[in-house]
Amino acid sequence: MRIPRKMEHVHHALQLGQSGEQGFRDIKLVHNCLPGISSESIALHTRIGELLLSSPILINAMTGGARETEEINRELAVAARETGLAMAVGSQMAAIKNPETAASYRIVRKINPRGIVFGNLGSEATLEQALRAVDMLQADGLQIHLNVMQELIMPEGDRDFRGMLERIRTIVERAGVPVIVKEVGFGMVRESAEKLIGCGVGCIDVGGSGGTNFAAIENARRDLPMDWLNDWGCKTSIALLEVLEAKRRLNRPDVAVVATGGITGALEICKALTLGASAVGMAGAMLRVLRTSGTEALIGQITSWHHELRLLMTALGASRIEALHGLPVVITSETAEWCAVRGMDISAYARRPGYA
Image (cartoon, rainbow, N blue to C red; front, side, top):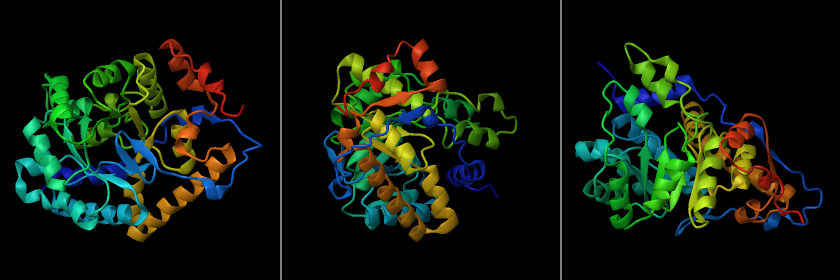
């Protein structure tokens, strides 16, 4: 008997792991030997639009839609509740099409009634489906995920992507909650980000490559794999800089950016935040700790990331997440080469006056 697709994704994600090639080795933080602050003054809260998060770390969309995934969501919700993290569920389309599976999503709100919870649907969703997804979780916000290449490789995936922007615009205008549009691991570039911002999207999750590889996952499910698509897309460091460039060109400092894709530790979190992200999404790294070591270990790992991030922020002289955005950072190697040919002035990052 074939296991549900949702659990196939979980199994393949754990088996394939993360490449670690998310590009943050190319990002160099600039040491500050005169930080002038105390670790006790560090505040980790941040904002995604109108939502205030107690931590810049977000448990990003993973799963739901099957009995086995309800257990995963339950334990992730416990970790979110105990550490103060916001959490997103996986695509709720399964529950909209089959209401019997809704419990695998509702468990998140049941376990964490006062936490920040994000619903999740694909860009094929209608306004009515978006409203049902929000209501299902009493969600504080809604993620709309973009997974074109995954769908194209998926044997049973979609092949028609007409009307995506129009549906997103309608949901943004009428869903009644903040909307985050996110890539699932192939990276977002400036042109796409500009179109989304033009549709009223106030938060973009860049979803770069280097983490869970949905091309490889879907190829593992195919009888005839198209492995030559496994490295499709751009790394997370590049996708983050592309979306930040879209914000700059459109003069939209109010748009929040979430960095997601292969981030596994405090140094990468700090680098993403220093470049300009408001928050950092993590999925694969958390799933691996949960499934191999359990919920308490995941809570301990999140606590360690918070401690290590405070250490780094103290060393840099930044007492708030927003202060990191003004610090100099040097961009090198492949990420720098990409930015150069795409016409981005990365020297401006190195000349930031944060230490003046």
